[in-house]
Length: 292
Image 1 (spheres, rainbow, N blue to C red):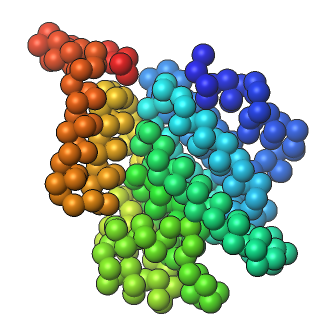
Image 2 (tube, helix red, strand yellow; image 1 turned 180 degrees about the vertical axis):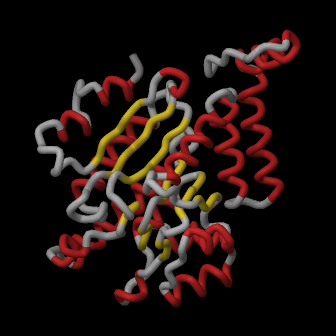
Image 3 (cartoon, rainbow, N blue to C red; image 1 turned 120 degrees about the vertical axis):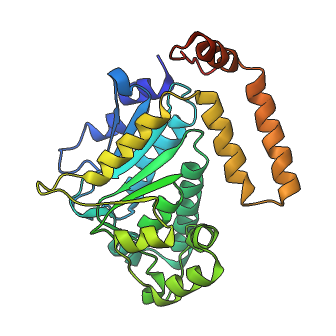
């Protein structure tokens, strides 16, 4: 049994075990490993209703646990990060908790948030953010650390820190700039502008904007699941290496990027999965990849 499955079943130190001691209203995070044809998809649900999924110490610790463990689990193919709180993805920092911190404690906690976003970004498998409502401040920074973002049309999306006389401190100034460019990032951050899903898609902040249906279902999650299902049949090692190669491309010059691509390709060219893919193509059947 893989590491993450042991975690979710409550063996050892785990998010699920810690949350099992709480009432449902107190649980801040729930992780579900999908099964059947969706095996390999992990759905991480933020469930901090009282604080609108604001990034408290407790929620951050739970997220750290999940992504630390996911990094070690080779059975995973993709992760969907979503919210169980209606009309909210993540409202950003827990300002009530922040008010009780000293200046040094704030610095330490913001560094911890920055490290959490790096954990999400460096997760070996694709991470998809399903934004079903407000993704503000640290909430948007968390979504920006994901590989793919889907938002409902009525979402509220923005880095609003300058309203509080601070700046985005968990990677927002860097990731937003890499996505939308220097001039647009400056405008959005300087003004603390809040965008809806359609506007965020026009800027390229989210990959897809989806309409809410008449029954109020989470269409952002439905689209995220659709994308995850498109990823599932592909060679897991190829997807992991592609994530590394593409992710590094924005950080280096083209020559260094091509060297990185070559290194990633050398990892897949000797794999069993590559041979399986060629055989399946020749035999006109669906490949059965093992991740080796």
